[in-house]
Length: 271
Ligand code: ADP
Ligand code: MG
Image (cartoon, rainbow, N blue to C red; front, side, top):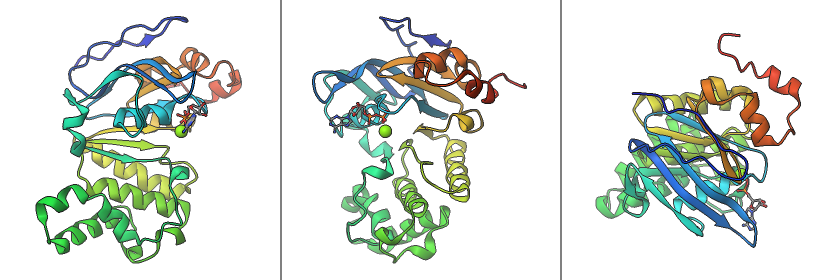
């Protein structure tokens, strides 16, 4: 497969995204607004199938908004969204979404196993009363994230990292082809971060596409194949090796990252 060239949007206008018919998720001209000022403006993006992509940008850059609007959780002002070349409406079942943890109501009285089984509601119609099979599937997904022994606990009683693992288990249970995760590593300990990245890399090895909003610039090179850099508008996208550099970081963060910080990111291959 040929690598897409790096596209860095000129100020004022945006370079057109290269056509990627093989994209797992493709956005064209996506604009989303909560009020007068758009939170996401005219964004083109192509998230490759079978690879891991980080969405990078400062707080308030529109990262969560982009995912939610792509999914149709919030309305878009304009733009087209396609998933594996199909309109999103027809392929929802192929997408699993793990929202930003802070956005979930943890007082909701439900057990860990029920949270995971909620991810299976699409199959319930087909499988009817086969709840035993669904439960076994949910348990095996909990096991994959090291949480099987917590199945009957109340979700609200778990630590932040444990809750994040449960939500990953729910996404796994959906057996999707495209995984969208919003800051899955935020506020988790090192062991949980390791557990989550191992599961995500296993998904990639199975040929799934993984897209994560990611806040830790220091791990971008280790964890991801591609970056999508956004600050309301698309700033740059492409392979980490060629796209994630001082120029694109400055363009994305508007000089808020000190030069020394950028130096510490060890951006040059083999440096
Ligand atoms: P990020 O995930 O990159 O931190 P968000 O997508 O959450 O950014 O937010 C983008 C912008 O939209 C921010 O200015 C934020 O304040 C605003 N915003 C997000 N959600 C809402 C909402 N429900 N109502 C109004 N404004 C919102
Ligand atoms: Mg966010």
